[in-house]
Image (cartoon, rainbow, N blue to C red):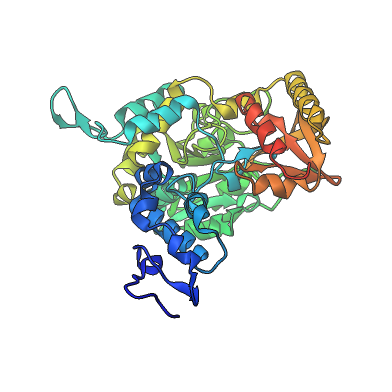
Length: 455
């Protein structure tokens, strides 16, 4: 391409250009704004502080290249660069969970309470996670979070926290049973999700598994018959994500404790005490009172906290686990400790509120939303719905709910919108179940629906 005398390649290198597209015809690309001028735009200047200069400059260059290719008018380069930028430095996007699954694994399970979110923010900078400010000496890591957990489960002699529920069980097997036997029912040899199977997980610790009973029936006598000098402990595992009905039987912890071997119970979903809506869901308090040596659970399920693994049990047992070398590799960070403590001591969070929600109140919310959207021309209806706990908790349990019913095409449009909303498809309609949506998010939900083009 010919250039006028004295022309500079600013369209390509960030300075002014005076190229021509033909004899006597100025090249419109000479009007493409320079990079430094674009970065002076208040929107992009703010984005540099939020996202970093490298990401913002990349968006600017991409927008400039589109203008050079004739795809974009030069006057729209700044707007295009702004549009190319993500809302946050992380690739994770906030989502409205309107699936009716309270603890949706693909959406991160439990949503943290406002108190827990504030605690995470406060802990993001330097904090006294392992320092006693009074004496200036090193202190026990996470001591206040552990004290809060112990206060909530006084039946435990001691408590410890690792980075997830599977890690809690791995630590127990490694510290107590490496090179020895773990006796477990065949009916409790479960797959915990994403292809991870309990037998494989436990075998990776160097322990040997001794299966007893059958898929549907295992008695205390089956465990007793399997005991030997190499028995490290008896393991009880809550099936979590499935339910066996009919001709079934399982040994209770109270039946196993008299056998004289430590009993370890993996309750899974992290319910610390019995809940009236979930009578069949195991909790931590019950097996501890029955004499279990150790209970393991997840923190990001029914407890409503961050992802972590809880270890609750006899003082000597928990101490042995917390001092094992593997415990260092599995320890949690300060943000998790802060969120866990705030979950345990603060006001009820979204999980507890969703679980205890009044179905009549959910119906009123759905009717109010449907009426407002219908007035704006949206085919929206309030309909009865059924929610579930999710996250491997309370299999088979359904919770009465109410939903906003929309045309099927709304599902993809809402999921890919500027403020993503994830619902579910049912009978050719997109349902937005309100039991999994905190009431303060109703306006956000309605705005997302109104933003769907062509409604």
